[in-house]
Length: 500
Image (cartoon, rainbow, N blue to C red; front, side):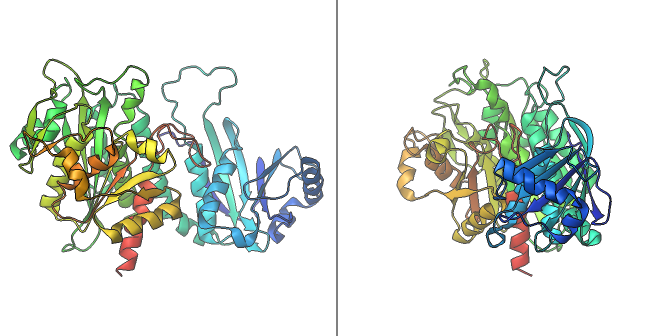
């Protein structure tokens, strides 16, 4: 993975190196340790702030080159705004702002983790470290040359000066594992489809075994034996066979039922016989963003030794239009025994999920299931790219997801489900159709999936607008965002904390 920015913690007394970063409030007030580190340069800050009309608003940045009175290359002051307005996720954004000021190439930086009235708490310093690493991620492994003005790879050594080094390291340790999971998910989404196809994706998921995750790969023979006709119908048009990967992390009590996460893994989606238009089809390499999230989440849980039992399941296919491809009008039999009339072969993700959801529900009987899928363009019409669409048959699960979405900044918005939508996917030839038409497209897709959860508490996240190509943020500059890893890791943590 592209992660060449190293972050560590040092005491306030450590000498500053390279670039120095400090924080001030909306009154330009600096903390005691910050003033001591700046020395005479504190006056430089005042003059530069006046000249640049810098008011210390939250996220505002004052950048001073070769500051007088201190032996550093640059002095960067980041505004925190009013102390009463600070929120947990602000520190993540401050970390992103810090990383945004790193120059390409090698360098060093010292960040003084202090607010005007007190040292930052260990968790706040850890959030800054997390934000730095999330923002610094870059996928450029296939670039052999850099154009003039194009940013190169960062290779920075960042020291975060804190009041209590041991406490900061302890707070950051689990967060570091989550960052690794997010960046793994980003890496998978960013890979080109000629490199990351179902067999290769399954191989990479298998690397989680090094962390103690049990990984089982179901090939075509195994899926045929299980009766996964819906998934195999999608895969049959590709020269590259489909796979289902089951990942298990057993960190909880042996007798305790797991929580489960299911991801759509269409490694490339042409639309099949119902072929997509050529414009923008290259983005369909990211149609496996749900599966990427599940792999990243399982990495995070295992790396931080989470005391939970979790199942991650991903269905991996390519949707291609060769002579053996599935046709509109075909009828397939899913693992559940329910039959599905194929109306549009580009409504393929729900077919993949149908069999994997049923398999997980029946085999593992989880406490709850969450599936993630870049499922419909309709959800982007409804919600844009700021929220994922959330559909659920369980109010408690939906409320928990909404809560942790606000906490992490990976927001969700609940959409309706109801029997009124069933008539749109009823078929005169089979038990159901795989699409209900244009109106309410994301809703009827979720209504379809609900038929395969066997009554398990379940939520479906339509991440078509958030997993790839979403607007860049303070903590993500990558085309593949890794959306969902932090959201679901927090969901798991909160769920088990509430049941202690």
